[in-house]
Image 1 (tube, rainbow, N blue to C red):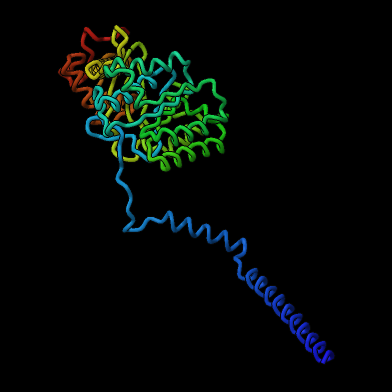
Image 2: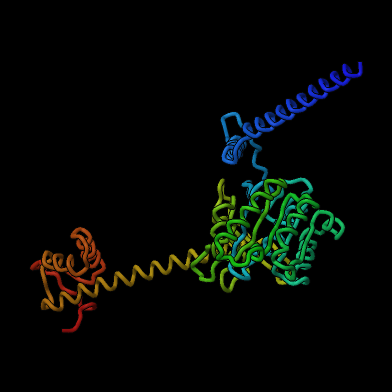
Length: 388
């Protein structure tokens, strides 16, 4: 009986060992199978790209939100949400003053010709260029323009003086402020401070892309302020940063101030949609920012009159030069020449076509600068004749 029990026990142990071996073999097979079925790195990359293409495809039935503009001028909207925009100008040409008007309009509903299209918007303002005193004057001037008290202004405007902040902290600070404040409109006065060099192409591309992503993520309009090149004739924004900003911005406004004039005129240089009309502001004698529509109108009329006068003076000068050449020909030909011969000579001298020269001769005859004698010869009138 004892031998039988031992034999049974050995059989059971053998069966258990065989079961363990079979289980381990099955586990290895499962692991190998799962490894074989895992997508390769190349397949994972392809799937990631396919997912991006699926997410970014626009089809006929794709629902996209309508443009939501922050402001309008004379019925044309600008500074749309979920996009970046630019305000450019020469140094000290009125950029910050223009932003003050935008803030006043957003707070009050309308300021001069600028009208807000948002209901009680929240405004974030990053000032990276001015002193704290000058930054504070933004709120002071807005209060003067709107008549609102400090509590009302501070409840909607978050103004940051960041001139002393390290460049590497600016973008993280902007991200944090966007998360905390949830603004509708963001002004970055001095976006150049966000990069080490405005001529660094890679860095410029990256910051513009970052701002575009942030405007989408936080459903706000981000307005970047940047100087134009120093040359009076060059109105492009500085460096690769300016080039990238101009390419990606939905709206680019330019502030101009003519020499000797206090009028700041804001016009649209680039827009993906309808361009807002230009408008003007200025500082009154008491330092207040006021509408300058009438002053700008007078300025344009004066410029038009000056340009007309210059054109008339240029035309008169050219007319006198032509007459002098005609009188010189008459003198060189002994004082008289046939109309046909005079026409042929003037065609070459003036480099004009025959009908044009014929009209000149007719005009001189009418003005009695020259006359045609009884023999059909053209002579200079006594008053205009040149000495031999």
